[in-house]
Length: 92
Image (cartoon, rainbow, N blue to C red; front, side, top):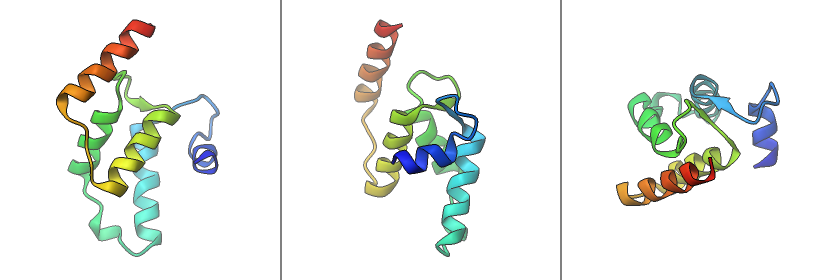
């Protein structure tokens, strides 16, 4: 995952934007011959679920969560998402 993160976080700021993430995933889909299967609506829903701090970008942990959801097809419940957001708010 570190290799993937290094390739995506091209500016070294510790976050990737929605656009960067979407374009990278589309490239991967195309590379493996599944470009027509990319679903923008699904991508946006997953992105919004994992962007716990709602800043419009993903840090490394949020990206890992996105990849795991995409690979396993498992998404957290609304209650789980709320709990994670509360944890982040307490940290800040």
